[in-house]
Image 1 (tube, rainbow, N blue to C red):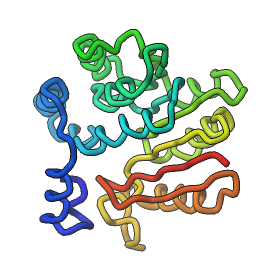
Image 2 (image 1 turned 90 degrees about the vertical axis):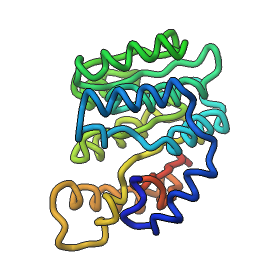
Image 3 (image 1 turned 60 degrees about the horizontal axis):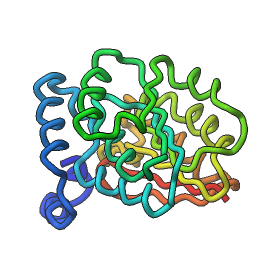
Image 4 (image 1 turned 135 degrees about the vertical axis):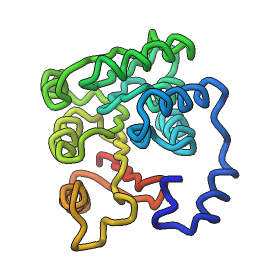
Length: 217
């Protein structure tokens, strides 16, 4: 489990086992993702995280959502399931290969009509979106160096009271290690940016690999 690095494994497993489980479709997608992508399957969100995403979308009453980083489609299915019948999700990714898997599972899940896939660099896709405040919910789970740009481009388009969920903000528990390399320094800078942003209210949850929730004031 992703939280095992900074939460006692027994506690992490207990929490997951006492969360509403994924259905057979999501389990099948997770299994196929492992077979197709190998070690890259770590990019897929945890099952309990998918349950939370659906609930957050439902609780906020979101109708218009954006996702940056779609991979094989697990998170987009969870977001789309939380949207009303007329809700729409723009899914941003750079990989035709991985999102082809997502497209198949969107069809199986009956949510394909709610999702519009836009292939290309996430920053370019976001900058091309309408400038007004129209996004109700967003999920950021892509290249970590790009987080500040994705965050800003979404925030200026986020409706007041809208919510952004940001994944991997604890970096396997290495976020407080000054010697940690890789994507940790970039994520640490991003976390500091959000914490100091007076335009929002935020909370960093020690959940999965760290999930930050950001509500626009």
